Image (cartoon, rainbow, N blue to C red):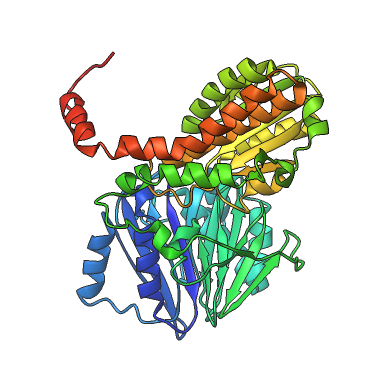
Length: 470
């Protein structure tokens, strides 16, 4: 749930960091902090509580001048919410400062090893152990890249780290494993963030990091390395969402805005595969020949996406007459169930970064099963690794309670069901055309329901204080 940010450029880093973290507040957090590197000095300000409290603390007289920095909003895992446990965390001499999302599973072993080399620990966090491990190797190598590559061969768990090295002014370093991290490139400035919405107001040119990618930021320069320290090429992506897409647009809450964006999300998602009067999934990579050979479907997802799958199970079996198993990703990973080779695994994830869903997809692929991802974030890890991708066009979903992304995922599943049925000849051409007409009419019907806001508020008022409902 934590939010992460890094910046280097010509602007005041603290302004960029605080603005970006504010855009990540929807993730939930219990503490916040920033670190700025300026003329060889590291300046850290952090506290338990809201970002507004951090801003007030800075205004009270903290010097955060500098053009290079990192920021974080923390949801406590190891160690209670407190000023001390808040990120950023640092090495004993402040030569390495870092923020971290994820879990360091072997932090106790790392702490014991470092204690034998004279390291002391001031927090209750697993992050501090990782930061000081990187510092341990940095003291040996005097090179950030070599220190990071050595440390990640020891660290177990899931993580993304964003780091400052005091002796390397103007540079921000990052590394990811199973936790999302993207890099942004602008004119004379560069960014790291856990979510693209944090940097959209500054740039739409982004790189999506793969697992175990290491990234170095300089002003307007982004470089990538593998775990052996060798440079690696990476394609840049232009994000089509504009900054205003992540704003409230006149609504009091993001959730209200996104409820009212459902018609547009449904229309755009269906429109992306409906051309010249017919559905065309070729862009997703799923051909008629492939669909003809599918005898079983596994739908794999977590949370709300799982409930999309539960609805899709009914519609696919009804229309296409193909047996469907809906699997919770976290359970699919650990079951020893027989898997059919000529099956299709449909992977549903709004972010394209859901850890259990990603692991389940990789398991399916390892068994030779073809995968199709239904995801909302272009260039996300699941989208990159799946054999086929159907992008929903919901735009950024800020509210934790899903609305438009859920509706767009349902439409994608309906389209898949219809195409499977068409290819296998289990529905008549007339019925197929009728279904297309129904899908085309959905956006207008959604809007007509939402237009009855007074009636909806009246219904909500009747149920808001109910302890049970049937």
